[in-house]
Figure (tube, rainbow, N blue to C red):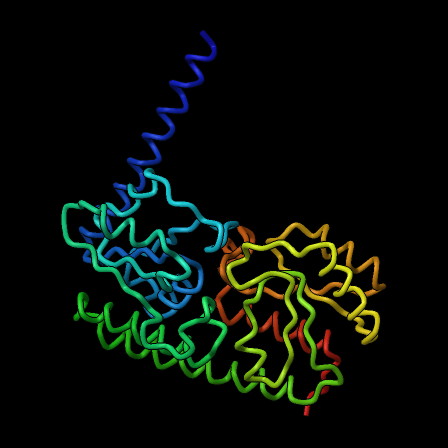
Length: 299
């Protein structure tokens, strides 16, 4: 009896949540706001900075998960009810978007926005770690926002310009702070997200996983990595906030190194999301840690 009662209570709770989400979207539509869903955190952060409170914005991949390991569930499609735009990074990073496109049967047409189709180095899954690409992604998002919400066009364009100026400033900070470093190699106990960015900054990026984060290093590769760290007298290694820290801790113990965090921003922690951390906030933390790990001196 208690088990049945518990199931009934859970079903009631689910229905209440669904009603709340639906009612929230209906209110947004009533008051003239368009409804937008951003697939991942980078597109969410960019869209939020451009649109502010002018739209009803949600993030598809929940905080605490990343794009590489997200698996689409039938229940996720409920989120798309009455949505005007679905903004994502790329098919390569989020192949499940194709499934949504082919199966979506909403009340009205849903526009899908690929933010990276005009970016450089399209082979890279982590387009947002290239500051030029971030501005291209922002242009693409703004184009679609203004196309369906003409009345707020001037505000979107003003916010876009402010966003680009901050990205330009951020890029200059990276160049300035990382141009005079005693070390040039970033040993990353994580996946190959920063290769493109490192090359542009004249740094050498050594990850233990591929860019898709699908492989695990062999015992031989781990041994080679430990030897490399010891032979180069490396003081700091890097890892990712959303990874299990045990592997990085093991490498740290074997090499007598300290561990710093390097955030690829293909997801966001629940804490950072609740604190409204922006893309720029997280990248500036990365800059601080890289600068410390490579013993960089400001000019």
